[in-house]
Length: 323
Image 1 (cartoon, rainbow, N blue to C red):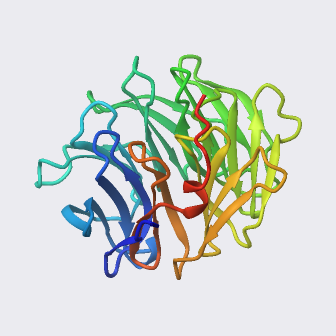
Image 2: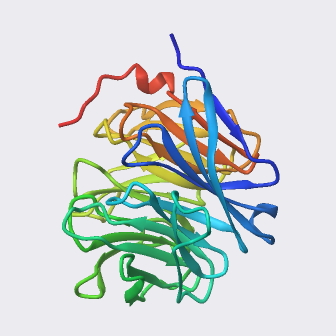
């Protein structure tokens, strides 16, 4: 029997990012903004799902829009958000008083935050409209380095799940860059699209594979060993692709959400890569994540003031292909 789609509604807040806890299968957090992020404040919602639906565990307000979110990989209570005032906030779900720390060095909106995936380091990377990426030590609440090179807004910064001190960034300048934090430089620059790139993500099983999603409505899968042309181009969205995520359970499967109000699922190894399309939102879909604990469970959030959790039938029908 198909799982029922669960919905949580947050009136007068527009969803920008959602992420499931790496520690608890039932816990998720959503970053939202008032007035479509143009003005007003933001709210971080910490939510709990059960068989009955999705309930509010705690909410935190910030005086500017919240655009991205990342859970700590070493403390189940801690998460980080990026805001429209150029700051990052470190929150503790057990502390209702407000943020533990506020990190303010960016001069424009922080559109992306990500907590490092490798066990040897505890770092957060942020990407901003000020064209810089910054690497932070969240435990000492200080910026370790500021990385320059992009000639446009940085929309997405994502740590490699395989290589310590390495992250990818996607920008309005049409390039994907791969950075070496120790060297303080980008070791690879890929002119990935002739349009703004709003999102990128690493394959969970191959350290050389990255996907980009852009305003040109295409997703492109890249092998970093040979970037003259993409391994695959995935077409089907009719407006800008806002976020892309690789499956943590299936080697060549990924998901994308878009300003065309849809979420799409793909297997880039197939001749016909589109696995399925879901049209359950009535506004821009901005946030997207896979549950690391529950195979094929997906969460998304949109500007229609909702978060939705579900298992797409098109994924449930596939055999798992983890190496």
